[in-house]
Length: 374
Image (cartoon, rainbow, N blue to C red; front, side, top):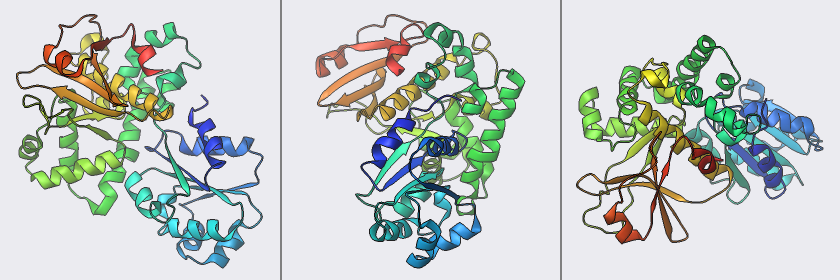
């Protein structure tokens, strides 16, 4: 198993905070990560799960005596699937305020549940870390640059979920990613608040697959799915909070010609894209390789910025008339533009962009992408 980048971050932030929270999609290795950390930690630790009824009862009780009895004698408590425990934030605050030197690691799959339960009670006491499917940088620790480029087809088609990457058989890869999508990712969305129109969400996701890289009209999505726009917005919000979709807004600085209202949507993993449309063909047999490339590079850049704690604002940019830039990053008052082209090496100059923002646009292709994402 590859060592995850977040491994070192857990150590660093446990020294500074009472609570470290690891959130991310199901099946990305959160449990494996924290168990590996426990196996090497010098702290006396205890691992419990939010799936355990006894644990849920104790931490939901807000009873300090019960909590003390459970964790007495330990320096570090890991609560896996912590979002399953009602009022977990209040109970952790009780423990931290009353027990000297106690530390907690919490993991959760659904950010809207976990962060809603712990955000306010643990204000100033917690550090939240995002764990993604494998990043190119993590894969680069055991494959060299040449080997990664050789495997690009696999990464663009099957994605980077750990079980998928570590599997060598194409048929098994397909079975694994289909299981992840149907049994884990979408199951959480369907179960939340008893959502019954799972067919609407699936249709919406398939429509979004074919609009990767394009601005999305929620009204158009609503009409195609025969629901109102409010429902579409609500479902998209759930999909974002469940680490299925990532919303990208438009960049503009009060330029009348710039588009500001539309959004783009990317998927956290390419394997999820191809599972939704049941297409695992090689790139040379597909017409959507450009969309797959754009989604892949965008998410790998997002992972890099997150793991490196690069606090940049990300957008796309377009002016009326069609000229656009796939990704704009803004940091410390500076902006940089990037175009994602699988094979192209040159693009025409974008006069409106260069004159307004005094910035060149760089192409990210299959030859130079590694320096962009690792």
